[in-house]
Image 1 (cartoon, rainbow, N blue to C red):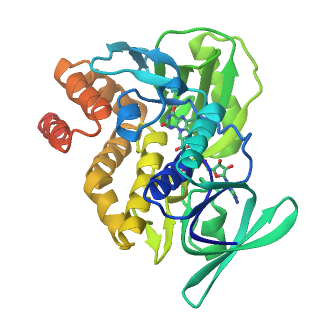
Image 2 (image 1 turned 180 degrees about the vertical axis):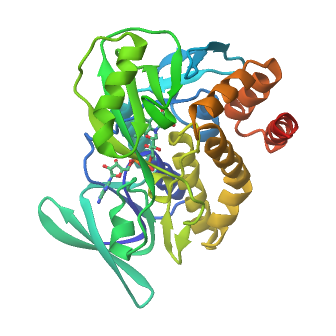
Length: 361
Ligand SMILES: Cc1cc2nc3c(=O)[nH]c(=O)nc-3n(C[C@H](O)[C@H](O)[C@H](O)COP(=O)(O)OP(=O)(O)OC[C@H]3O[C@@H](n4cnc5c(N)ncnc54)[C@H](O)[C@@H]3O)c2cc1C
């Protein structure tokens, strides 16, 4: 097979890249290993990004207008969201909708597993397992959107993205806010969560090493007063280091490049934007544009959030301090604007940085 662009992975990053490429008439193959895969995920994203990214709103299963933050010592902070809300999607279905959108603009969707690649005379030749047969796809460009365990990274010998482990479970219960629980006893350097889901509630916690996660989740459930022992899934969440964009005509987008916002661990939107930016760079015929587009839009945000994450999540007393800062209305307002109004340029980021600089100095 021959194509202009081969996109490996039909999650949010890959499907978005394929949609943007084909909308501009570029021949694109989108290879997805398992169309029935359901990514472990809270499925929460700002409602405001549906218009920005052209995501069909039928994907929204619930709209949550309140978040609850609980400090290590148990201080509770309820924040009502204004100007938008948290849209909850059902991940398997959401990913299918995004792939369908890519197909509608002309992407050729193939169920197959990327195995390896080689580069010959300026061409990329990818080996893909399709229906048990080894097939070869020749392509000018390749987008690695194959997630945190990226096989494309492996096949190129690119250092693996660093990560945090998560454990998550679905619970048969009902809540009306997204809850973020801080405390080193159950979420060292991170947080535990309960998010309303399409059916029931998605729960989980994060930390390392993986062996400690089951007991961390049990500690969280005990603290939250949940007497439950649901089936769990362990999955990695990548940690952003700002290093990887493209290696000549091979692009890394989404979890494969660690495009998850530090502190909040918001990955769906950033994966989709990375897919869009990679597509734009290919469309313009200038691979180096990818890094430029990404840096211009996200680098400072990610850098600031990483600094705040390292500072506030290093221990319980720092997390306590962060939550007491979030009681201040001006911090809530600027943080919510920064989070909900993503396409508003840099002005909310500048207000956010100035406020934290003033408070922390
Ligand atoms: C427990 C948990 C909760 C989370 N909650 C949220 C949340 O509420 N909101 C949020 O914004 N983010 C959340 N995230 C992060 C979010 O899920 C990811 O950042 C996002 O899915 C990244 O999208 P992606 O397209 O880069 O990768 P993925 O969604 O992982 O998609 C990769 C795709 O590639 C396919 N693939 C893999 N290998 C191959 C191969 N060799 N050949 C062909 N196809 C392949 C996979 O089947 C998959 O479909 C959460 C993450 C975790 C672990």
